[in-house]
Image 1 (tube, one colour):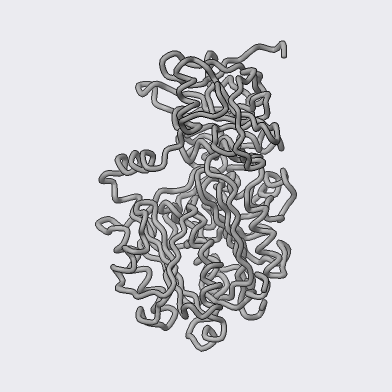
Image 2: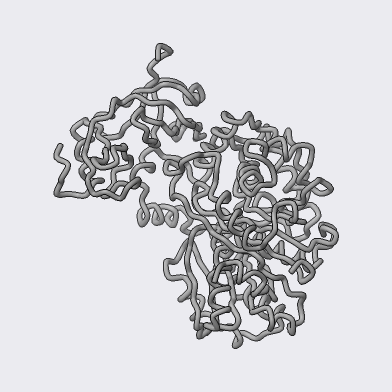
Amino acid sequence: MESKTHTGAEATYQAALREGRFMIQRCSDCEKHVFYPRELCPHCASLSLAWVQPAGTGTVYSTTTVRRKSDAGGDYDVSLVDLDEGVRMMSKVIGIPPNDVKIGMRVKAKVMDGTGLVVFEPIGDDR
Amino acid sequence: MSARDLRGSVAIVGAATTGCGEAPGYSDIELLARAAKAAVDDAGLTMRDIDGLCSASLNAAMWPLNVVEYLKLRPRFVEGTNIGGAAFIAHLMPSMLALNAGVCDAVLVCYGSTQRTATFGRKERGLARNLLDPSPFEAPYEPMNPPSSYALIAARHMHQYGTTRRQLAEVAVAARRWAQLNPEAFARDPLTIDDVLKARMISDPLSVNDCCLVTDGAAAFVMVRADRARDLPKKPIYVLGSATAVWHRQVSGMDDLTVTPSKESGERAFAMAELGPKDMNVVQTYDAFTINTILALEDLGFCNKGEGGPFVENGAIAPGGRLPVNTNGGGLSCVHPNMYGAFATIEAVRQLRGECGERQVKGAKTALVNGNGGVAASSQSTAILATGEAL
């Protein structure tokens, strides 16, 4: 994707997700990664933010189980995930019961088909 | 000129609350107006003397205009910055600047909410707020805010420092024990640590007893320059320090979930007041959730980072403990109508005036007030208040 776009960063991010691609930004000046998508780098105020594909791997920084009545869909996870590129995002860890999500757990991003939502799955104990 | 030059230059001379708990049949502005009138009376002034106004609301973007019209004020100074519940405490500094500059002579800070009993349209109002101020990178994951954000903060603090749910429960039980000494407090039933641990979970690790109340209530206070304060009927409560720090909006934007902007606002407020944590006789800190009190005690320097859990054990912040914290019962057990900052300020004023009856901290001359705003300790405002003896 071009670093210069004709839409705002948020719309560009969502458009990529709708095509199944999870992209984050990286500052061409200070070389730090940026999330959520912005018009200028929060670290050095540069306007030179380029879109890059993250490795998709990360670590659960914190987690909570939101309690919800079972007839409304039941309990679910909300987590903060630190991507290996050094940025943090809110997401949810799927594929395991919400109470089994633990801080420090290694996870990998997945773009949910149809919703353009980035969620994470555990990637086991080998990392 | 530095902030330190403003130390003690302004005093709170009138304070009042009304409708705390349940005020069925009243609107936000009606409760606010009653509190405003009572605070102005308490100051020995009339509404015509009020030429400065600070107010904020979660429901109206231009709320100071509503208040000006309702009270028929003609203010020369208007401050409506809404940084969440830390507003009203944050309004102290701009008021000090305006009063000292001679822009105005008497500032009314006021707030009112019927969050508990005004059930009509509550769901729609919540949805409207989300529509007007979307959080596109959080909302799709459905955090139940604010509890889920503070739950994430609590979970990280527990992971990093070994803080326990039992220590969080100590905060709720201490607040309840203070509330039992306060006739104005809404929740005064007995509460034990086991009750808190067994209570219904909202967003792990926070149970319903780790979360503040949802009540009605209004609060107002009046500030004038110190020279004028001495001629008014009530004992002046001087503002020695005031500082505000804002670091983020949402929890995903918080750099370290275990450190709040109180670290910065506290340091600046203490420097302005030329005092430190050891000099504080009483502490009123915004306990939206039990973890807030622990974070504030750490970030304000009452204990080291990570030691807030052990610090509150064994009733240390309850009546008879080593540090009186939230002596009205706080947001957890006294009153919490959406935004609590003005109520914390008024409890400090009442303690320093010696008006607190059974819960009075004997000889209190200094008080720290700490506000919390936003869904994730996003803004914090710290004030140091004192009687004339501590000037």
